[in-house]
Length: 204
Image (cartoon, rainbow, N blue to C red; front, side):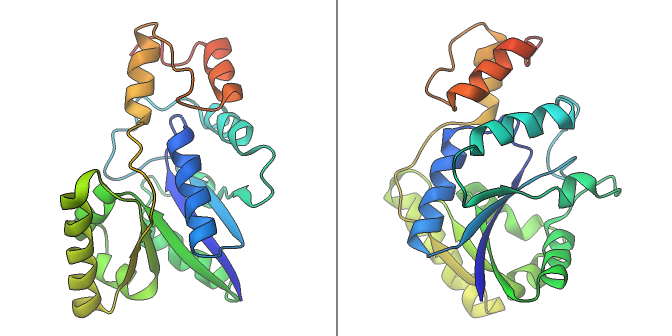
């Protein structure tokens, strides 16, 4: 059975933290591919400042270039619903690819907020989750405690990815860009060039 990691998000913009997380998940859990699912809108995020879908896709394509295991799925972006929920996405993926085992890659903050997600109990029961660590032993310990709690209560399968905590955020990149500061080394060179050439995030 094919093993595929799923990384969803606005990718506004995609940065090196996303790519390192995806690569670590692939190697540690022997995944065949990582699918990046850019969303049109997210229920828990204000999407008014999103660039056009085509620009986010162009940045994502540039970032993934050269890695044959990294692919883009337009499932969420092409969905006509105004809001995108992980439960709907994963249900559709499992129906469309019944011979594929999916691993949902998330950050620590998403793990701690998962109880607020739409139909989160059903989501927990039907998926394997791979969570990126939060800084410090206390953060990792809390993640392990919550993973164990969800495992006992919902038969959830949640594993912590072993990797350094990388404090890069799309929000910080947008802020620095808007202030005219350098974002070199925060994201792939081709993405940085695209942002500069298109004048993205200049009004933030």
